[in-house]
Image (cartoon, rainbow, N blue to C red; front, side):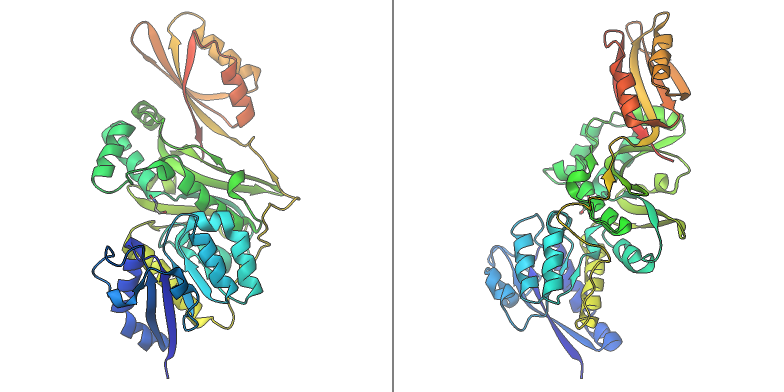
Length: 425
Ligand code: HSE
């Protein structure tokens, strides 16, 4: 006899629809492979009248209670997006002993400790593979395959919208505003792009990724976040001339009891594996004491890839109903006291200055850096209009505070700081 597993959907838009279609199309194959009969019992929608027409109306409801309190439902699949009411619905489901599958990085990053506590207390499973990197199996890689290792670095392109925009800017020399407008017209960027372009989406994902990788809670609030809205095609072009490609990276590094977590535009050497991940693709580079270097790449968004990851979680949950998985770290509201989070990380820096092209100006720039013990690794100067010059330099490794201090000592009437972009290798 096949094991019957009944699902309740919270939300049934793009992602819910993708999951519905995968489970319908693969139903018989899953039954054959796993001897599990997956049935979609109900789906919460805002309005049945306005709901998508490719899914039977008779499974739809406008009442969350119909899904959350139905004793026949085994697994609640959350596809609502946003923090609330998704997080409180998931919490209610877990408190009722229902296993939850979600792709909602925001609700998870901000409420994970509460959800995990509810899952543990009520013997329910909580699965979220699709919350970071879409179809890329990075959560399971870190929590299962690499669980015995000591991971010291995760570095990811975890937002497809910004990777698409930066790739277009890079390949076509176009401005940020121009590429964003086109991406919105093509449906590749949201009408309100803030969550993507200001790095919020990547920061939620980094909170999840680094917590798992470093086996300690890394709250969203600890993450330094900058978006791509101030990037100019000049930065990208000069960086390229010096051998670097610009990406919006989510970076987590751990050394002993110190962690740095940051999301910002980053130059990578052209030969770095992440530098070649273009368009809307996502990729996550991992370094560990034993695994050394590895990279996972795939589609970070889209109904089909996301549905693939979610349905993987559903099947995993269905086959582990008596023994649900919990992550192997204490997921507390606040980070562990023994861990220090630093904003004074060390990396290299790309700096673009607009300077008066007169004697002594380059010397004053060099002195400002040398006074903070910052060594310049390479330098480019280009004439600009009105007797001015663009000075572009890349430093050797330096601390963030030293670089900020050095830039603050430059006289803005003579040397204007146009951009400061971190460089990783
Ligand atoms: N908006 C995200 C992106 C996909 O552009 O990658 C969902 O996390």
